[in-house]
Length: 404
Ligand code: ADP
Ligand code: ASP
Ligand code: MG
Image 1 (cartoon, helix red, strand yellow):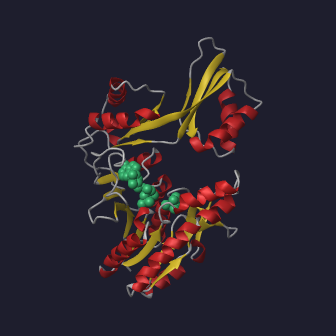
Image 2 (cartoon, helix red, strand yellow; image 1 turned 90 degrees about the vertical axis):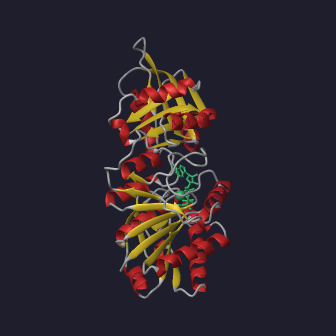
């Protein structure tokens, strides 16, 4: 069987009109003799609304109930797609993850798919049916519904491609592919034709919302090639590939920014072994992901400052944990919610000297102050004031010739 997995994101199934278009795309693949497995997200806005409802009920909505609630969005869109395909004369049926089942491991809200039971879906495909599978959700070994983290339908599609040995995995979204930077931030962002898992993983982890980071890890691990393309216009998209020898005449492949970060500084912490561990231990126990960290070197060997960034949504919990922490003493606790992390990503920087300097100089020329720096082999990230995001993106995009 020549199987293809087609995943549709929230905007692609956002209205009845959009769902009719999506059904036409699916039928196009059926006519090309593919056996099609459809994976769908919730209609755009639905998941956010459900999350809002949980917050209106209480501050500490249990994560197992959160998963049951937010998984509901995908149920609606899948039934609507199957309904439209039926209307067009095709055999199609929606499948909730528990009906297959799609098995997951890990915690509620951020589970990962560990196995997919293939039998029922394969039989349905063989009988000429088009299964429409809910993205974003699975069940754990207690038979409870789990979800895969925001944007998790991408991971559902990639894992379906793996387990059903699909020839192709196509991610349909509201942009034409992966761009050099978020096209909604910068008009002259350019579509990237081919990108390696490594660069895509950095871009996704550093804020390029177009693909969920875990989904790229899954793709890399299982060598699943992905095409990202628009469900609005039929144009060639971006290939995310295992190939490493991708020719590029540029040092930098892409640039990303984040919106919802917060910076926390503990001023005047004792400069002794174990202090940083005491600060971060309760955060890690509470699943708070600490991102950038700097510790200033102390001038008197007695005191130092520790600065780190976290997601804005974790800020109040983080502050509560720090204030409750009897193991650490500090003189002051400073919080800055107006920060954004800007990153440049590209394998080209491994062999090209001077990239860091060019990035810093470009920002300096625009009068943009750098608050924190973090680097890895193929990325450089800086924390800046949020009000400078657009200025920084546009200057760096130009400096690294990404619009050519
Ligand atoms: P879907 O609902 O289809 O999963 P998402 O909203 O999750 O779509 O992702 C698509 C969005 O990602 C685009 O509308 C775009 O604004 C944003 N985006 C951020 N960075 C990039 C990038 N580098 N390339 C393309 N899109 C990006
Ligand atoms: N509907 C889920 C979300 O909004 C999953 C997805 O869109 O991929 O996060
Ligand atoms: Mg998405």
